[in-house]
Length: 249
Image (cartoon, rainbow, N blue to C red; front, side, top):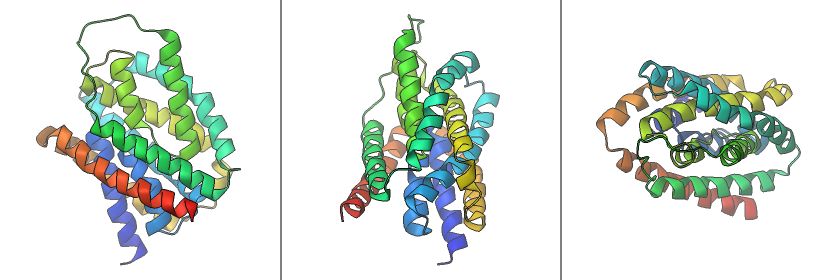
């Protein structure tokens, strides 16, 4: 199978998951770039940030039109992660590749476990928001995004529900705002690395992911969200195991 076809297929899956679940799909981008398309871990995390930024912004637009984005609170949550995302992006460029791969495997496994566990439902009533807790969650999410090139929606959605008492639709939509801001902040620190990317692969991957994100939103309206989360969680667990074995050998 040609590299172009692989890039298009992988991008479509990533976008589908991101559009349907508001997170989790971007975790598949890095292993797809490494094991299917031959990127180094460092190049894959940089390319993933570009892919995630473009795809999340597209999915954000669709969710915003449906009124599922809380701009003010989401913007503050995202702002807490900008500096950590930028600093973590600088650190990632200096880490040995096996360390980066093992760290990514751990985060992919965490993402799978988070997706398997039902997210506690918000009660729909306003409640006091703890600024330190919300800021800490936003900063931690930004650091993960910058270090590993993932959007972090699998962490953002539960955080928005439990820390800020968002209902699920608003949490998914607002998580896309957080993902876009954090990914862009980290990408800026890696602008030098982006120049050396294989754009003949990265560009079609991104295009397919953007189209997949639109389909993902429609899919989420027709298919059980729990079923989708279980499917992607199983894929993530398999990917995490493979990457961890690769890092240790």
